[in-house]
Length: 118
Image 1: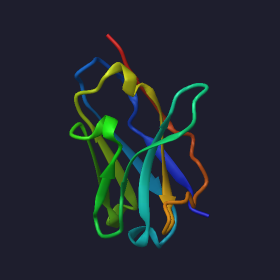
Image 2: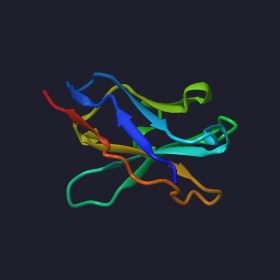
Image 3: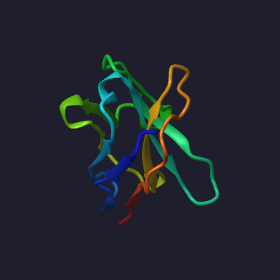
């Protein structure tokens, strides 16, 4: 099963930017669709964005135009560039590998906390 390690979170002021990174184990990374999720206490984990093996991307409406997902297959890494951050973006962010029907395939990592506050 794919193992994932997220990093890059932190405290940022509203309007600021952060770039999250997620390193995946295994030698089939380039063939996998990868997704970013976020979760706040007491709520379900929601998908933020995903990128296919071919580079096609899809975003939740709440982050369109502000977040950009990308990948570096040579480094087994998927990124989430977050700009124009809002307090409602505060959450723990996770990544995972996705199957053909966007079902989660890997073990959840520890996530990375993003806090947007002045």
